[in-house]
Image (cartoon, rainbow, N blue to C red; front, side, top):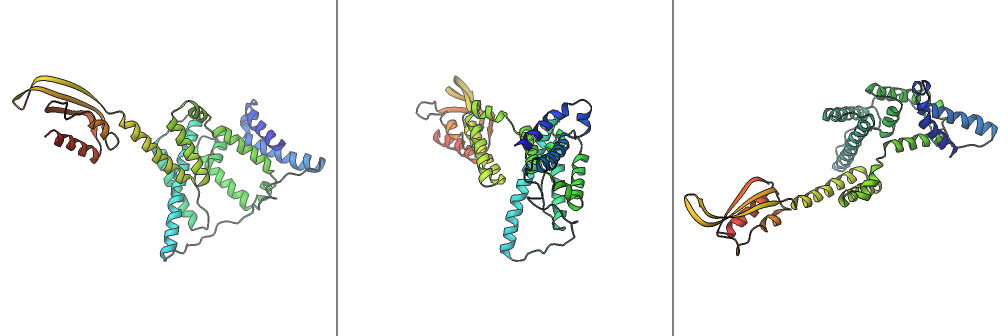
Length: 327
């Protein structure tokens, strides 16, 4: 707990120190202080040990080697590969776009569609190259991106240098990384969570629409217990159903009974004029049909669709049904 607290305190208040606070990244200072406290104060003076990276997992590695993958020929293996490929591509694409959006919000940058397309294309190309070097593919990392931004990074060179130094540490400088206490790294991750979490979510759950809160809960639970791709798909389907339900209530019409109206050269003593407004589709057809009553309406009805939108075949069928009912 001491490691976590001191790490979070340094990352919070160190950037506010004049001059020095902007020269050295706060996360680097927190890691160095945590390592010093662990190996000098805790272990040598107090004889207290906390788990380090070396005691958790080995960090050393070699340079990647070229290895052309063996393409499977049996249908079972191909189906398995395709399922995981589509799932991981969907998760990676969504997470990269969300990471880019979070970075834009932190830096107050106006997002562009071209930026998302560029990130996804670069990610796909990099994952393709990883496959022929026995490496594991990946996507945008919200934690590392947030740490870079918190340390003052604003350009793509920061992410490039992060990858280069990560390679150097794994290949030749793993001994330094293995000295880091796990608790200090936990403190860094806590600060990342506090910086990226949308605290307005609780306001949405408390004061927002019930459907918005339900969408957040559904996506969160399915992402935790299944995976992010399933959660996103479920959220999209649920939001689409909610939108269809809401749009069904937005169909309105101005109804006017006009006496002595001439239509196609013929004079009709009473005509019902219906000016329909809104979108007509499968969910709003019932509301549209309820605008008419065969027993009470005059024999001639004029329907104006100037401000209406006919979306699907259900709307066309509803209009044809009304026409047949008044024939």
